[in-house]
Amino acid sequence: MSAACPKLRFHDYQPELASFRSAVLQGLARDNKWIPPKFFYDQRGSLLFEAILEQPEYYLPKVERQLLQTHAAEMAELIGPGSVLIEPGSGNCEKVRLLLAALSPAAYVPMDISGDFLFTSAHELGTDFPRLPIYATCLDFTHTMNLPGNVPDGRRVLFFPGSSLGNFEPVEAQHFLLRAGRLVGAGGGLLIGMDRKKDKRVLEAAYNDRAGITADFNLNLLARINQQLDGDFDLDAFAHYACYNELLGRIEMHLTSLKLQLVEVAGQSFQFLAGERIHTENSYKYDPAEFVALAQTAGFRNCRFWTDETGQFGIYYLVFPHD
Image (spheres, rainbow, N blue to C red):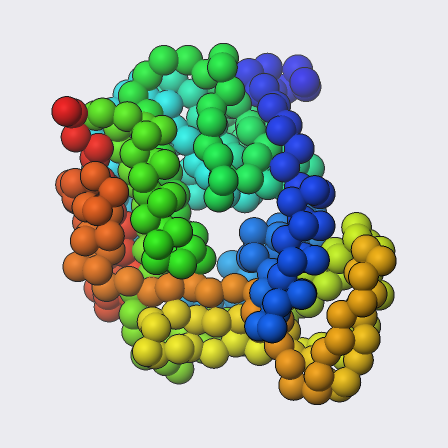
């Protein structure tokens, strides 16, 4: 622990390799090949995702940042001083900085599946906020969000920005919200961002940026398989593909095989037909009434909602009521 970051504690539950191997082998063996999007986020994948956030076509970060900046004081008042702020999928910890300027939490608990990236990001945050106790926790928050035992008491509030809940299937999103309710407990809160349904052209442009960063991010999944699971994917033989499924209200990302080919992963062989796809991500978009109804099924009550002038994105503050 660095002297410049005296209150950083790092807890590594080593969630990555075993579950990665199992998910890849099972996903590639399916008729409709599928690898969960949580495995995008190795060290390089996390850096590429941060680069995606800077692309001009990707509207979401700019809109969300503006909402957080404009309403941070009101959000902080709802969260309250002395709270324990928990952020699953914390990434580079940049968004939480907008809240910390207005909030005085008892502790901050960033959670991420990429241990190296989490440690670096938490250390940088701790250097800038040296009085803030940080309990960086490396785990797979899609399965568990258990807090380290030394996290102090205080009202629990989950901070889940960036519309990450949209990566879950609706039933999985409901299960996540149920786990969130159990984690924060009676009287706890949830501050969450959700992308809204909008013009197909805007959505598809956001996931097909002209610089090709999203394509690199998608293809990096194959590079990670090659590096960590003894794969022999030819990245030039696959192409990024993203489209908006209007019927299901979701962006879909795929990797398309450009030819008939055989790929080896962890000693197993998988055949790809020309045009066959690996489904790598869904990003569901929710109108406000749809999301509030989903949150209510998990026991949350909507307390406050903020959106931009054009209605592209929404941030919700929900509470888990006392019994």
